[in-house]
Length: 218
Ligand code: PMT
Image 1 (spheres, rainbow, N blue to C red):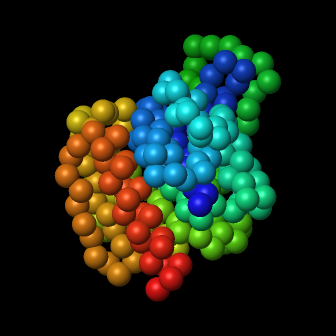
Image 2 (image 1 turned 45 degrees about the vertical axis):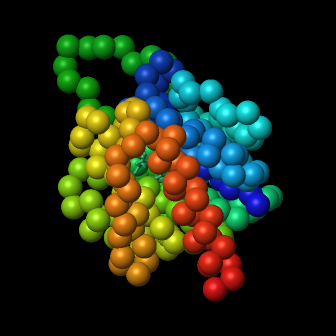
Image 3 (image 1 turned 120 degrees about the vertical axis):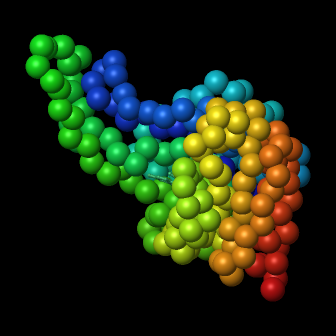
């Protein structure tokens, strides 16, 4: 059984030395990759630039930008479609419309940046990549956690969305622990208590394996 996991931030270049990014450390996604490997999956980890080392035996695909992540996931879905895809990456929603070829020189007056939307990797899975497998999204929210997660679940035709509150210091970005709410297409939810990302990842992989099998053989 093949599983694809996206992890980490993306970097959206402004000029040769500057970029826009976010505080994702990759810990959640790398923990999911390790847990999936332990469960016997063939794991492909598409990762933005992070510090954690990829677990042994995991096929690591390194990317920088949202565009590169989109292309890497598209190519994987075409060549060896995974049975399960879990999108834990904090993909930038916007990028500078123009990438300067030379370092922008600072001037006294203000600098205005025009940003444009990046490709939506999760949002492309069903509609552009024709992905039919078990699709898991994450929702990084600061308010209306379940409501926003359910909207994403419907809009992106996910089989599960894992919602986490990223306004807290002790969970979400770059924390050792996380606390999530599993959001299902039925509208049902199930909270998973705060715990280490490694332990939470094992629980998530176990749940996803069971749900994916049930979807395959209802
Ligand atoms: O990496 P850590 O430091 O361990 O932190 C973990 C985490 C907080 C990053 C992780 O738990 C998490 O919430 N990941 C999703 C972050 C995110 O971008 O959430 P979102 O609600 O903005 O995006 C919703 C979903 O769409 C996500 O599955 C995301 O991967 C995906 N997305 C978003 C934008 C985009 N252009 N393409 C996408 O695929």
